[in-house]
Length: 465
Image 1 (cartoon, one colour):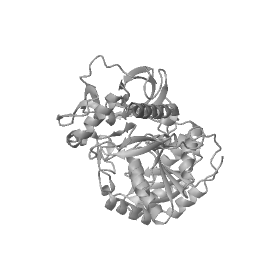
Image 2 (spheres, helix red, strand yellow):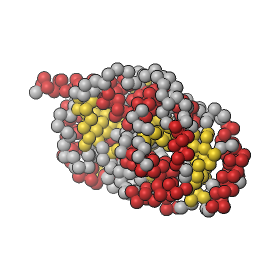
Image 3 (cartoon, helix red, strand yellow):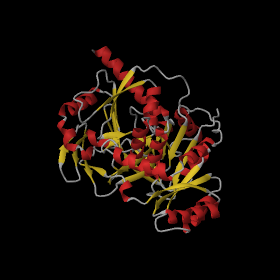
Image 4 (spheres, one colour):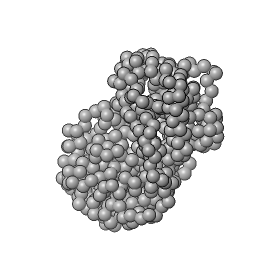
């Protein structure tokens, strides 16, 4: 398979350089021009993807070369990219930052090379001028196989400042500068303990419009589109995920989605649908019952600590979840979902509120990031996700930790990282809760087993009733 899909990656010299701000502005500017755009984000991010999805009215995909093989990454990219005329990919951290033990894996540069995508490097010009040329030259020479074809300069203080930066980069690096954004502290998006405040919680339309206006004024959008259209044909690949015709959607899986729970890899949802799931979304904040006909539940990540009082007030739904769990309905919960299924949650301000009580422990918000990074997990016992010894890759990013868990509750997963072994996750009946966000494309069998567990529950319940 091969396709010359128009595509550009926006990379940064480092975190905080303004990638998300510029990506947001460019996405809306392209949409205003009538260009259909598919947004992507490199790495295991959920918050940036929410902003991109809202602007484009299309789910933003994750492109992660730790989770995905080269074939799988090309497959998930092309599956959505071929539906639009342009794909805009926001990078992660600095251009060459990736897995700590092997920086080439998981980095924006690694994804760019797999996709043969041209890279636009975003440079922070705050407090530098001609030195910007030295910075860009270093990035160009660090890995000549990374195709840096242009630059966008951020935090420029004026026209003369921009001219100095532009001249230095173009003269010393042979790389075209496509424009800039002026220094404007009001362009910043609101943050808290996990990063940006999600698009589901904040109204940023006025801010996005202001950013877009600046992008349209100071960045050569036509030149950026031309760069994307000159991207070479996508490398050939062998499909490894969506390999047959989609299955008939005959199993209803309820998916928690509102401002308290909305961290999902879009690929996970796509894979579940492809394998036969009819996804029925519900709100843990507002829904009094699970959707009619539910045969399984998926509760992803989010911010239950920010909405604890509202969640605990919805006792009808919490009671149903506990009842269904005891009846054997398959429930898969990750990170915030794990917090939701515990007996109690202790918030940042030390309030203790009841949760679903499927598991007897308490999750407690800490004062710092508790665990962070990629992990490869192996099941220690058979669960709804797989038999003992099954392996899947995931990512952790959480401030809470578990207390008051009885010793009889054994861990489900062993995690390996840099030679150390960690334990994570619990299971009761057909419920699995873990701090890991698994990426099903790293082992599609996890998704298949989850759906088969739901199908068995549906069949057994129908027979018993």
